[in-house]
Length: 189
Length: 365
Image 1 (cartoon, rainbow over the protein chains, first blue to last red):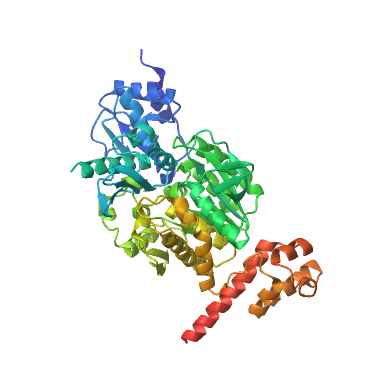
Image 2: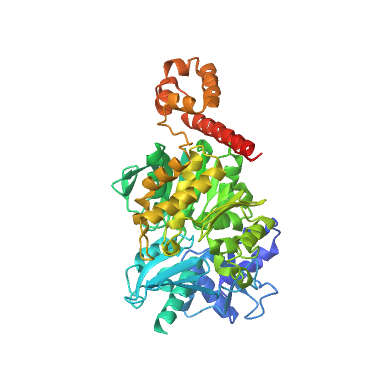
């Protein structure tokens, strides 16, 4: 028998609702999956953990995956994708609802201070002592996990610091993860 | 009074509100002592130190949140409930999870407040304002280069999704500022923090500050927070926004300069030097700013044109303030004669500023 949750989106499309202002969805993202079974499994896992997610039809710009997607709070992408990985249903693709063609940042700015190296990814900057390989500062970013990530990572080496992917929650955490990986790459070169 | 709303990086930290004090390098709110690190505690520490030095006060609403957004939701709900019953002259919103529907509820409350406070947004609150299409509600945004690119990108829902062709333009700050205004994604003023700090509005760049320069400041977490804290207090104290912003840029840089920073310097080392930096910068401005501790006789002696404020108070309170309180500070006079100290300070500083503008333009002519 098909779980009830799978029909939620049908119920919603069946009734008229107030028109939504474009900005109402500015903080929502879309998770794209290989097949409907994964969508159902992912929806159940996320709802059980208390997230506000909805199953819906994909926008025309999304050309991969099945004919259902999950709408979710975009800012929490890092934590949500982590959960889905652990559940064995990682999404094929994650895109913002309002602009599905946007891609995550892939540009790094690198500043060499001599003893220290700073890498910036989007709004996040991570600085390491090149000799001691210690994380000495984290700056930028406006999501509430940034101060928490900084407190957890500063003073640790790039080998022993917890990964933002593991302890972060938000897109700022995701940007910091990219800066962290780039620092590791730069310091191993 | 200035009010700051933001988060503390702990899941156990309760929703807390109260006057903020600076005690032995810790923040004290109600009876809770709070260590200072980056984020809202850094902003509050800089604001508390600045307010202490100038004899002003500030209030905060704080909640614990490590990125799950649970604390932020509680704080949004609390603010939408209590703010209609409060009267803050200035409000600074900081590290809150950017959640559009919650920001829209808050924006409805702020938009209906009369008189409308001066509204400042930084960090997640600035993201939420842009995502909600409500940037123009705010008087000041304080982005860094990455965040400015996000404001300039009309498509991006978060800095993480800023398009590459815009990110590549980080050295073209004026173009990005212009683009942010074109798409309605900037506050009335922008303070762009970076190697050079920019103050701009929809008409263009108003001023820049790039000295003293310390390249390491960019790497230090919290230097943007301290700048937002300082400017919030100066604006709340009655300094005109443009002047307050340019002064705050200098204060933050001078404090950094005194800390002899390296990329490994921690923000508390810079906060310690804010009082000295304030003295340097505000003395450099010929102490044009009047604080609650300034004696009425000193105000009238230095700025004769402010006498009309005291004449007006005489009519309002039925007491000749200049006869019976000439040697009192503004604070003591307000307590004794029962007038609103903050609005009087704003009036006095506004008159002084207008007078200086007039003198400056006549000098140019």
